[in-house]
Image (cartoon, rainbow, N blue to C red; front, side, top):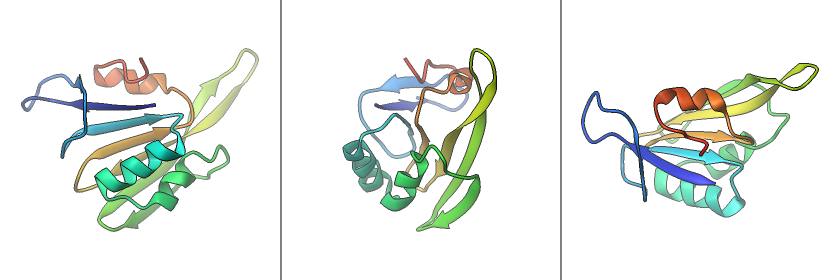
Length: 117
């Protein structure tokens, strides 16, 4: 699923928007290959690094490619009887900020909008 968010002016809360525009936040949750391809085109990102973002076994690291900064990280994930981690990739590019996750990440909701709704 892909969603786009933006602010109309500095200091305003993020709002969901219908389509991509420069400077927006692109949220990719359980993305399809086609959604990854579209994000790569729109944001001028490396497709292979986006594909790495949905690998459930991807290890944390930092990459820099074509003007984009890719932060591959893992966040705690509570299950009924234990805690594990799930990958989350944050990308800052000249075109947009992008987050990629294999599952909804409730921590992103703290940015003001239900990113996962």
